[in-house]
Image (cartoon, rainbow, N blue to C red; front, side, top):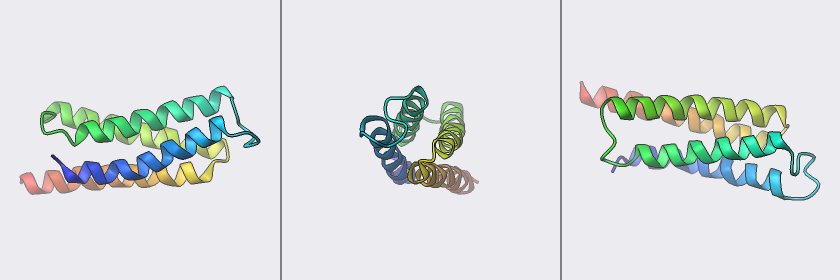
Length: 112
C-alpha cells in the first residue's frame, strides 16, 4: 500500500464533496448544469485514480500512466471549478495536483 497516494486522495475527496455540493445543492448558481456535472465527474475520476495508485498491484508503466492521468485530471478539474467560481473545489484540486507530483517525485527518488 502506497500511503503517499492515500494522502493525495484526501484533498481529492474534499474536491469531490465540494463539486457534489455545487451540482446538487440549490442556489449555488451552477446547480444541475452540465459544467458542474463534468466537474463532479472529473473530481470523481481524480479521487478514484488516486486511490487506485495506492494499490500495490499497480506498478511500473501502469503506475506512471495512472499518475500522469490523475495529475492532468486534477489540473483540468481545477480549471473547470475556477470557471464555475467554485474556489474551494479549485483549491482542493490544485492541492491534489501538487500532492500527486510530490508523491511521484518521492517515489522516483526512493527508487534511485
